[in-house]
Image 1 (cartoon, helix red, strand yellow):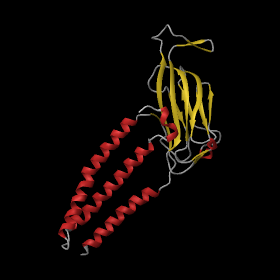
Image 2 (spheres, rainbow, N blue to C red; image 1 turned 180 degrees about the horizontal axis):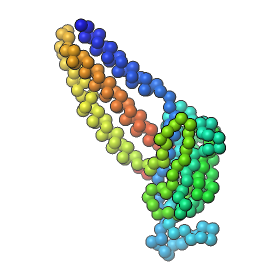
Image 3 (cartoon, one colour; image 1 turned 45 degrees about the vertical axis):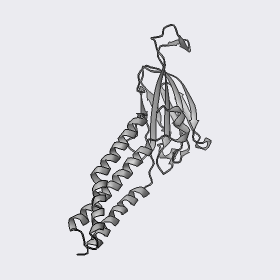
Image 4 (cartoon, one colour; image 1 turned 30 degrees about the horizontal axis):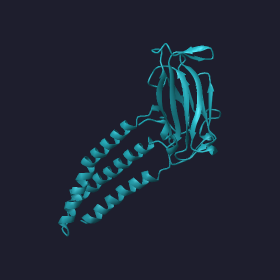
Length: 243
């Protein structure tokens, strides 16, 4: 039996799977936020008045909307007149919105406040294009008291997530270590043994298992790094989010 031919075939198949995933073009809209409590009712000597109404708990949220995929997102990827909208709870007063950073004027971002809804309008977004906007509201919760409505056509599982860079870093490092120990190290040891035994041929078990483990290591590493860079902030947004 041509063991080396079998080994090469399986290895070629593993690499083909990797490059297949690598070549996929996807649209990946990302919504993340970070909040700050600016003033609370625990300091009654400080008073904030907004349109003749006293604000007890003044909070600020920076919200990032961007495209982390490698395929452009256009406004016609949404149903007619259905732009991404952040809807605050009925008991929350939304005081003001302000567009603080954009990737490019050509994207034509508009942030529109209507009652307790904040609508995000745009023309298109290439990879890492996006907008950061500031929302001032009356609430003392750490999590943003709002939900996201973003009905992109053909894209599911879009959520509004709190930005936690340290969590993503530790998760990625843990996954890389686990993948290296479970898949990477055994495959390297097997390849080393194959080289040492040349010109003798290795067993059929090693010929099959080694490329399989190597494929798992390549694919799992690629997915971890892809997801990590998915949540990495574009350059224009970094100064608005605390690490």
